[in-house]
Each structure stands twice: as structure tokens, then as C-alpha cells.
Image (cartoon, rainbow over all chains, first blue to last red; front, side, top):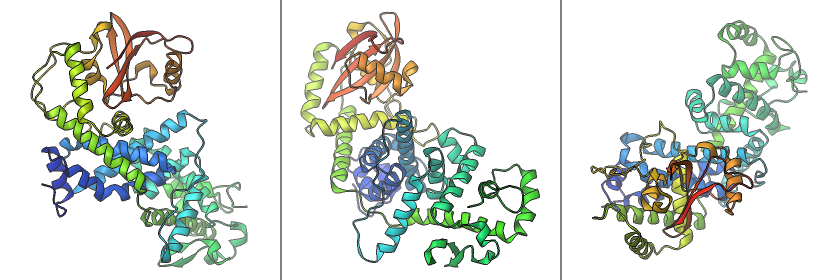
Length: 208
Length: 254
């Protein structure tokens, strides 16, 4: 029986035991969150939808061997990210396929989410200016929160390569996002290079 | 000027160098030497702060509320899961016929078609998704050992389904290849696309699975393609399949 109050782990167990509805409930719970992951990774709604479908079907089949009770979300997230990475690799293997112009974050929600929306769009567009080689490690490390070691494993590259690609990507993003202006001009006013709000540095151009 | 193009190792600072330092990409000796200089230099600290602000923006981007999955995609996903669920129910239903033959396969297909009244598009999408998703799961992912039935205690490996005569190509091969990512010489997507074209198949076709097989004593790659709801095309091609060379070893619709 699938109860709305069941934990994710319960749902996985029910699914593995043959409950035909348990997995659908799990999908309903996590669909939107995983959609956001797929969309920001792939930047194309069609591709993101396909990747998410692949991922959930893969999870459907793999659920029988799922054991770690408290990590259903982490497990799903990883499967979704892997499905997206697989598509990124395919895209790279077909260089004629253009990246979509549309950014991932075009929320339909209105109201005071405006500022967040704007920030998301700015960051999304900035990320789009990176090469895939830099964008993907940055997405995994800085956005999705994977460790350098995990990222290296997922991408099949050395940890040092992940670090240096992230470093180059961040340097470029810092410029695109306006955090890094003209160091020589700012050199005399170091405290002015960034200002802080909520305890963390903010982008330079906000006040300019 | 951002400083990226400027000298490194001290003022004026190279942004790339400082980004490397911040990311831990420099060797420990160089980093240990550099940190005291960086910490003592306001310009270097400002650049580091800019890099940290960039990372903060990225974290914020991850946390930002995102729009829900559009309804038509969500419906498609639900249908795919429902179709997968149907396939699983069917797979777990008692099937007392371990040795398939042409007639029973036909019947099975008809039965499957009747059960899967979800529409060809949905099932095709779900089936294709299964194949692709298997490729996407890394070996370390929990549940990656989904090559076979999850808890099947019985062994049906009376015969190796990967070595067969071309006229016997059918359900055992479909089951053996479905969801597998063993492309062999066609690991290169461009080569696979060229081989598809040589065989009159759309170059962008996404196989549901691939497996290395031996057909009539010849080595080949079995590719499973989805034709429609519960309908598959199994094609085996030789390793030299490519532009102008179909190298087809076997081909059957089931």
C-alpha cells in the first residue's frame, strides 16, 4: 500500500516488493526537484525531460538493490546527474547539435521571486558562456555539491583536472558575473573590490 | 583588464593563478609558498573574494526555486513509469515456457501489445529510456547490477543467447541485449550513425541495447531498436559496418 506519509525508503522497499504504485509516488515527490537538476545541467527542456525519464526508469529498475535508507534523494540525484552527463557526452560527440538559446530558469512563478529569478537567469547565462569542459565540472562541484573526487570519478578525469577546470571556469564566471572588474583600478581600494551582504561577498556591478 | 593576462606569482596577480590556488590545483609546495603572499596582499585577497562570490552565486543558483516540470513532460514521465510498471508485472507473471519458438513469441507479442495499451509513443519512449539510462548508470551507483532480473532465483541459461544462428534471432537475444551498453566497435557514436545509415536506419536512432554476439560463427554487434509498442528490430552487424557497407549479419523484427 502506498501511503502519502510513507518515507522514500518505504516507497522504494514497497516498489521492490512489487507494489505497482510505490514508484509512481516517489516520482511525484521528487519530479520537480530532479527536473530542476536536469534542466540546469542540460539547459534544454526537451533534453532534460528525456534525461529525467531515462533516470527514473533506470532508478525503477535499480531500486531492488537500493539499500541506504536515508539517501534516496542522493541516490536519485546521482542517477539523474549521470543521465544528464550521458547526454552531455552524446552532445559533445555530435558537435553539430547547437546548444539551446533558452536558459533553464524561466520560472512561471511571479511575485517576489523576481530577484531570485533574475539571479538564476544571470548565473545560468553566465554558465552558458563557459565551454562544456569547464561548465560541467563547475555544475557538479559548485552547483550540485559533489566533491572533487566524486566529480572526477563521474567524469572519468583526474582530480587535478577537475580542480583546474573549475578554477578556470570560476575565473571566467567571476568576470562575466561582474565580481571581477579591473583589479588595477581596484588595487588602491581593496576593500571595495567586493562588498558584503548577508555575510558573503556580492557582485560588484550591483551598485554600479 | 582583469589581470588574467598579467604576470603571476605576485602583484600584479594572475587571476588564473589565484583561481588555481583557491581550487587547490597548485602543487602543495607552490601553494604553501603563495598563500602568505596572497594573504598579505589586498589585491590578491580581493580577487579571491571575487572568486568566492562567484561560488556563492553558484550555490544560490542551485537553491533557487525552480519552476515545476511542465505538465506535458510530467504526463509523459508518468506514462513511461506506468509502462515500465506494466512490463515488470508481465515479467513477473508466471510464464511456463522457457524454450521460446516462433509461434509462442507471436502470441507473447500479441499479449504484450494488448496489455500495453499506452500508445506506441509512450512505450517507445520508455523503452528507449531504459536503454539509455543503463548507459548512464555508473558502476558505483547503487543498483547498477540490474543486468538481469533483480531477484530471479532460477537460471534460464540453458543456451548462450549470444551465440546463435541468424534464423534463430529472437526473444532470447532481445532479453540478453536489452539495456546493455556493449557497443564494441560501435562505441563511437559517429561510427554507429554511419552504420545505421548504411542499413537504411535513421542515423540518430537510439538503440535500446547493444551486445557483442556471434552469429553463424561470425562476430557481430547486436543492436536492439524500438519499432513500436512491444515491437523491436534486432539487427546484427559486422565490425566493418560503415558508410556504404551495411555488413548485416542478421535482421529480424519481433
